[in-house]
Length: 437
Image (cartoon, rainbow, N blue to C red; front, side, top):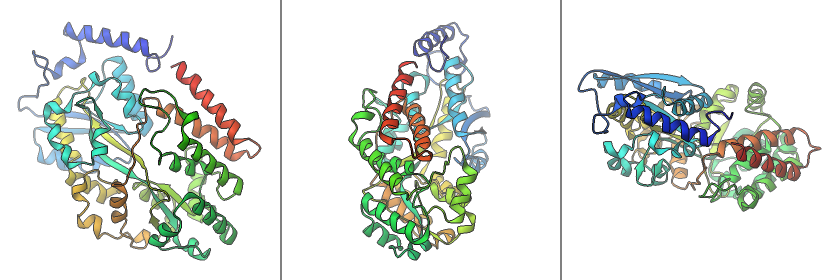
């Protein structure tokens, strides 16, 4: 028998059974609705809201203020690992019970949940449509199904190039942020800089050539699926371009083979010791570098990446219908993702707001960061955020990406493997995996 998570037909049968039980007064979602089927509140009594999110989201830092200013509502945070947060939510939705009042969902996962819009409240029922003007349009639309708004936007992940300024300067490369952006304008320039950096300092310009693949892939119009969820990896020109540059970086010997997912300690040591000269990542990557490479304080800067940008990460807050107090949950999430609270989270942890109205705040325009040579990173992030090109990921994006990233890591380590043949084999593996889901 297929698992509840993987068997689509079984999921639909189970969903029908859950709905039948709900009609008989036994469903877990009944507590959230009145007799006419609309969401209800708790009539002024204090309620407790269970909220699921993951480490690094930083909501636990502002929830106390919400609880203090909303005496009738208390958010109870439950913080999980990123992957556990999503798998637990899938399990709860499949089982028909156990989901929280508020659930955070990452952009890479959102489409697999949007396949089942009836499992979440349409937040327009509570007035979400009136908030749309406060957020980047591309971000707002990512959690919509038709005219239903199933999530409210949290942070975004505009990509930039973090680089070791001291090593660039030592190698005779441009080293001031504006000069780096002006003189390393395309990916060929980047590879050329990598060659010089390796020759002059012995430093790899990347931790892994797959990091370059991911950045170029995310600059395209499409990723792995089209709008009909058809797998298009083998016909996507941008993916082909990304693979070509993976091969070039790999063959030139200018990228390391450090594995951030499975060998984090080794990777961190390399970043901290100067074996890696750049990090292509989102705004939240600032904290990543500071945590992984504490001995390099003052040596890093950030600039625009070649050939435009992309979005790496960002999430949404949703209200599952299994929750008991939908109206209170909406009150909570609309406060948590408000522009002012997004700005507060940015100050606390660096997660960049999706609300442009705060981009002119002094915390963004004037705040310098000592670790980054007092560079005003917020100015760069806000410029890049407005240039982001957004692609639909599709419900099975993460399944495919895990197969590709793990497989290409093996290619990175073993130079006897042919990248083209291995990548083609991984595509076939992904097709087989999707066929059996």
